[in-house]
Amino acid sequence: MSKTLALTEQLIALDSVTPEDKGCQRTLISLLEPLGFTCETIQSGDVTNLWARRGTAQPLVVFAGHTDVVPTGPVAQWHSAPFTPTHRDGKLFGRGAADMKTSIAAFVVAVEEFIAAHPEHNGSIGFLITSDEEGPATDGTVVVCDMLKARGEQLDYCIVGEPTSVGALGDTIKNGRRGTMSGKLTIKGVQGHIAYPQLAKNPIHLFAPAMAELVAEVWDHGNEYYLPTSWQMSNIHSGTGASNVIPGDAVIDFNFRFCTASTAEGLQQRVHAILDKHRLDYDLKWTIGGHPFLTPKGDLSDALADAIRAETGLETELSTTGGTSDGRFIAKICPQVVEFGPPNASIHKIDEHIEVQYIDPLKNIYRRTLENLLT
Image (cartoon, rainbow, N blue to C red; front, side):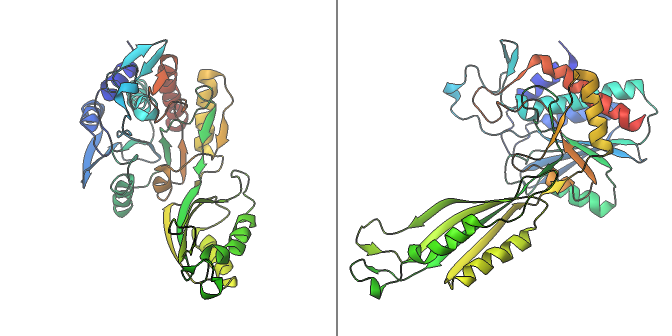
């Protein structure tokens, strides 16, 4: 059994459902300290974070990831126990196999092999690991990034081990992610008997013209790396349940997935302008889940693409699709952040798995990337 596979199985066996770490990071520390890493555990609430660094010179290449996993869902629906690493049909099954304990294991073994071959390598290597990525993400990576910023530690390159591949290992690198911003809009009307509409104000009717305008609005045209910003309603709640009552209010939940061609503030202003134009009486509460980030094609993506090509023969594709990740926090203190990891088809699902054939090549890609950047 390869070192990477063995470490992956060791990590999967630890039932680190967010925000628990369950000793995953202690396992990593036991492997990193003998390699010359200085390891710091940063506890924030129930969340365990790890910052580890080897060397003091620039450039600093950081591997980032999370030890927490999502809940298993109905255990009875799994074909094997979710925290018992199990092999079937050339696949390794277990919660976290794809998202993202294999990547973390591959990080560590890649660094071990790189240091053995290049003990006097240029620059420095870091690890930023959290147990709060699958949860609220308020006590995890953002806390470590704030600490590093306050200390003046400069990150130059960061690879986040999120599962980015689609059809085969290496086909996709994420070089950015869209922002997410939600709104809870309450349109105020006047409740009344449906037979006497002149004595009431129907908030659904009042909102309808503004809704049509919001749906039709072109928020931006995207750019080289992003599709246009999207505005979508997810829920509309109104009425008492009775068929003869005009409701007193209507509550609309909506979300922006926005690219770097727009800002959260600019989008908010435009929504308010449309609502105000229609002279609506309303309340609107905003929640920003994450700002977009983008790393244009450059040294890091080139080094990773070259490593993928050398290991798999594939020409990788840069992509910004999907949801948010902790890359959004790291991008505030690091000029080049990309995500790369195994295929993502089974993440968060029953019977999550990774094909065993991809485990060592993933480790080799990470090692080759270090060679491209630090030798």
